[in-house]
Amino acid sequence: MSRRSPLARRLLRWYAFTVVILLVLLGAVLEFALRSLLLEELTRSLTAESRAVAAALAAVPADELQDRAIALGERLETRITVIGPDGVVLADSERDPTTMENHAERPEVVAALSGSVGTDSRTSQTLREPFRYVAIPAEEGRVVRLAVPTSLVAEQLAGIRRVVAPAALAAAVLGVVAVSLVARRIARPVTEATRAAAEIAGGDLEARVPAMTTTELDQLGRAINQVASELGRRIVAEESERRVRDLILAELALGIVLVDGDDRVAYANPAAHRMLDAVPERLGAIAPPALPSLVREARRSSGSLTREVEHGVPPRRLVATAGPLAGEDTALLVVDDVTEARRVESMRRDFVAHASHELKTPVAAIRAALETIRRVLDDDPAAARTFAGSAEAAAERLARIVSDLLDLSRLEAEEGHRERIDLSRIVAEEAQRARPLAAEAGIRLEVSVSPAAVEGDPADLALAARNLLDNAIRYTTPGGVVSLGLTVGDRQATLEVADTGAGIPSRELPRIFERFYRVDSGRGRDTGGTGLGLAIVRHVAERHGGRVEVESELGRGSVFRLIIPTP
Image (cartoon, rainbow, N blue to C red; front, side, top):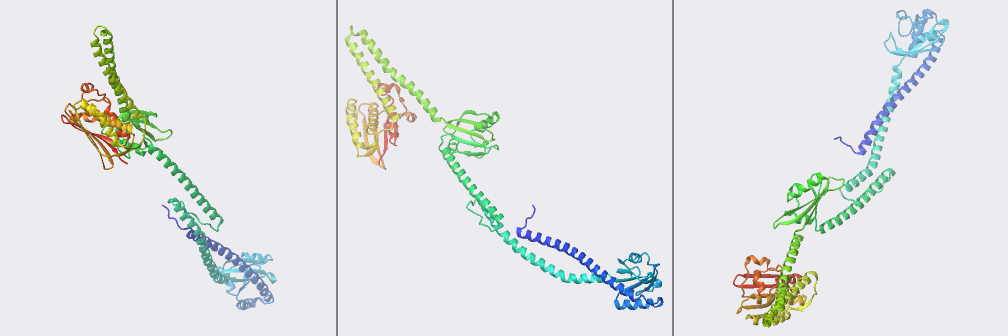
């Protein structure tokens, strides 16, 4: 990973690099220009001096030429050379001319011999030092040449460098300081914009980039602020949609499980957790195992598949449908708990069968009795009266069954009327109504009622009390006792009906509140029971927010308690 440096440091580094390059280039150009300028100035100066020397040597005899050249050279601090038309050195202020080679091919000499001013810069072959040469044509075809070391130009350039270099360095330092300040000023708003962007990226959508003085940076800040505002708006909208979706899915009775392409559970609503006894993070861990298999099969078939499975203790019936979502790797699993629906359906079938059977028995008895009456009416009036009594008893039983069925249907279909009532008065009235029935059966009825006020339907509560009393009297043998008590405590009223009858086997207790269920069906019909009384009592208790309880021991009687909350 490459290391990144701050903006101010980068600007300073690039400025320093640029300044160094520019100073080097500027120094090179300046030195070249100054060198050329100084060299031209030196050439002009040497040209003027050459003419003066040529004039001074014009009348000097040949035997005095060497001495005069040396004297002028010392005076002018310049090397003076006199060259003949044939290139032979006649005099030289620095060397013995007899030891010097022919100069006819020297560039400056060639130019001077041709009648013009000749110049050249090179290293002297005799002195082994770089010189600037200027040669001019003189009297009698001779050439006067002056030469000075080019080190003079170098010394002048060095002097200029000693002045220019510190000034350039000072300018560079000032430039670096200025750029450092400017870079920091530029970097500060960039840093603030970066900080605000980092806060926004970290989830603080209220963070904003302050206004900036630089147009481009201010535009950048406004763009970041606009992005943050739009992002916040979209997140709020997304969260609102998600909350609405979660609320809807949470209220669904159906279990919803979303599985992604890696078999991870992306979402599961509360109903799914409830039906499947918690939903794990991976598809393969979902129980029962038939559900993961269903999802995988649906993916392979690219269509929806439905399967009914059994799960949990006690066992529940679940109908599961799985299918892939269009255009995605995600699969949707929908689970419906149909346990209650199956139970209700079974109860409905049983109810129809039991009702048909219970109604068929008295109807058949009535038909048989009427047919017998019709046959014996003329021949045996006494027998006709006997069968007429049987038909009447069967009709009464049929009427009780129909009445109980209507009451049960009403309790299941209607909400019921609610008002504040005195339950003790209702119970006392039902006890008074049951006394003749108990006396006729040879049973002692004991009543103990305490004042109790409840919220409820007086007709329904009277019906429940009546069924409990009738049931107790019906299944108690002559000489037995039925006790009726009403007590209030712990914010509830308890209606207790106890008898000294035959009792109920413990294995039968869970089913006695089912419709048409009898512990002893033959004995129940003999006593005139319809098998619906306790089912009616249970519905009345549930409609009033209460419950019904039973305690029984075979051969020692039973105790039923109807418990209703008090205001």
